[in-house]
Amino acid sequence: MSISIRNINKTFGKYKALDNVSLEVPNGSLTALLGPSGSGKTTLLRIVAGLEFADESKNSAIHFHGEDVTNVHAGKRGVGFVFQHYALFRHMTIAENIGFGLSVLPSKQRPSSTEIRNRVGELLSLVQLAGLENRRPDQLSGGQRQRVALARALAIRPKVLLLDEPFGALDAKVRKDLRRWLRSFHDEIGLTTLFVTHDQEEALELADQVVVMANSRIEQVGEPQQIYDHPESQFVIRFLGNVNAIRDSRDPDSPLYVRPHDVEVLFAAEADPATDRLARVHHLFSAGPIARLSLRLEDGQFVDAELSRQQLEELGLGVGDPVAVRMQGASRFE
Ligand SMILES: Nc1ncnc2c1ncn2[C@@H]1O[C@H](COP(=O)(O)OP(=O)(O)OP(=O)(O)O)[C@@H](O)[C@H]1O
Image (tube, rainbow, N blue to C red; front, top):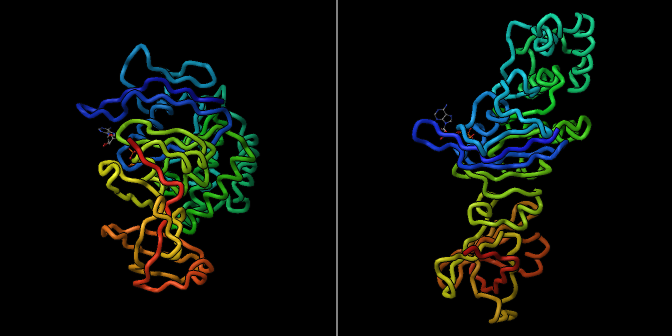
């Protein structure tokens, strides 16, 4: 089910948390809302869920697959929601937690207890927790608890899945494992999913479509590779990972942005005055497969470069050595 978000504004008192936000989430996609704290990601997700309502305006609307749900209450939108802090019921077993949404449906819609049991069984295998149905949440790891939260959100057969920093409270290793697991899980079930994160690596690795948000607005939307290779603003290039911002006399107000792995380091004697700048090796860190160099340009600015160990060995560089720096793939923003 596709999601269409049109001209959404949201103010809290005097603060504008969303400023004319429009977005198309394609059917079956995994879309990441990526941005720093306070950029409006959660507010947007809550509005899609129907847990919050946008400021009233005749131009603004939310559609699920063409159906206007702008004024439809959360319970009737058919959304599954997972939050950062596993809101599982501590006194219930895993099976009871997963089946909860079904067991509280009005009697006419409620499946029989056998149907609920079967559905819970299906979901337990889907999230790879079969055998743990009689445990309680405090007997599971953080990662397992988040998979229970996901199974619980799926029990009602939602039309869209909304995840708000679902791995935010987990440690880095578990987070990375769950991220990969979620990607293959998504490929298996193909449910349109909107995923909030402030972690650029997570968004780039996981999503089909990345929506970068800053200051209550959408900065850029695109596939991960496209956003990474063709950032359209200083904010996006800086937010997506380490980048050098080098000023030159040509346009001192608009730095040249270049990622450390796009900086080419050559022997000083090979410098081409038309494209290269001279520098000296200021610092060199070469433990592991990638060597990281801090280079000092003649005007005193520093440039970080990343080379393979092999490239470093070929150059035979040490601290203080002169080099030529060629900044390939550099971007400048007006
Ligand atoms: N109910 C509310 N009342 C007042 N202000 C709010 C409310 N909810 C959110 N805000 C404000 O709106 C802004 C956007 O909040 P939001 O939670 O959407 O950001 P976020 O990008 O999800 O950030 P985080 O990653 O920290 O969760 C913040 O400045 C926040 O303080």
